Image (cartoon, rainbow, N blue to C red):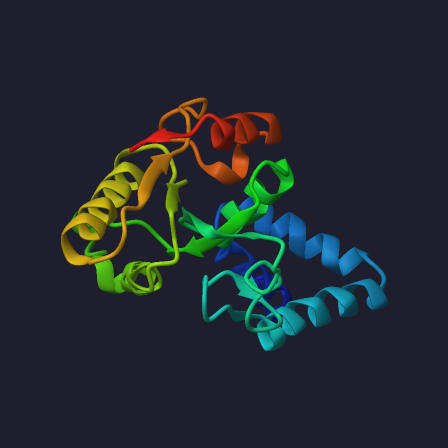
Length: 203
């Protein structure tokens, strides 16, 4: 990039750091920004900064939010005795679009992966167990992504619930397998996710 103006090269470099963005796409995005009106570019920059400055994690479920607790946790109309465990905030968005689930969430921010050095301290697993220790939850739904790491995470947490907690019997379920192995919740269509929630089974 030695022949490109340094500000352009810097923007290409930053775009290329985004997940799923290669150098070619980063270049297209950069030249789109160059061509767009200044006020549009300014709105993009301001939106990015607003997200970084105003978005926090909910202290209860660890979903992204502007207010703590988040609107889902603070909504008394939600089913307060059910928690759906997901890997990422994007999974909450995907499930909420279905309209099929009315309970609470817990966002792990990852999945267990011993091969990659990701253990229970690297995800919000202990925080989930502390929520369950209060004894008010009657069902835990595992909506981790289909695949080895998602299934391993669900099984590991299930073992901890049964061996580490002294709480009333908790029903443990997982999404129905309308979801293909190795897929991500965020890419599943709303009908498939809705049927997966409604057809959940015992883990």
